[in-house]
Image 1 (cartoon, rainbow, N blue to C red):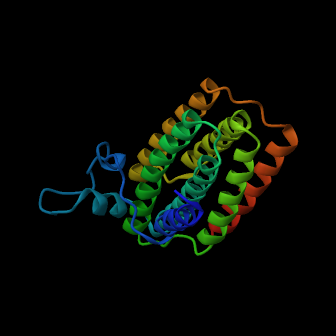
Image 2 (image 1 turned 90 degrees about the vertical axis):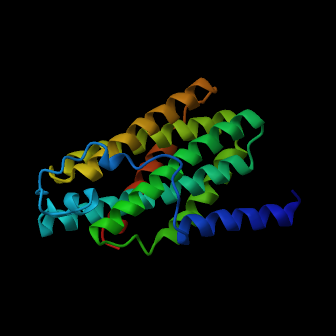
Length: 225
């Protein structure tokens, strides 16, 4: 593609991630394991309805906020890997990033679906975080494929820790959201391992500290808006 084609393609990907209904390539993991104990034989409810009915109003509000943060994280992941893949030096690195982006798109779809089921909304700040993450991905990619893979590995490590924290904070009765986050965490672990296999170089400590700081700002603001 020429430069104009590339720009149009990147804008299209961004608009789809931010404003279109995302379609997952895999089934939503939430309802294979959700027990419908709250449903009686007389009440014809869907698994989603049953999973929401099991929550108190306060638990539902907390789940919405936590899943909104996770949805925003997946918006950022789309932008980050898109930026890295755009300037990747080799087809192999680009393939690793594109494969990770596909699974992150599943996460984006699942989080969006769960937020809608809970009666919540996604963050109004998503376009800002998308633009920043895309720019960061381009910078990481321009440093070379090994640095780019190192950035992927460090990103996934931080996301894994973030998901573990959210799994501890989620209401115990919100089994649907919990199953989504558990599956996401498994995927993130595998992405990090793939980055290591493809020659990831260590990210300098000052950069990891900055990454944690930016992530903290994103999670705290997105929790509320």
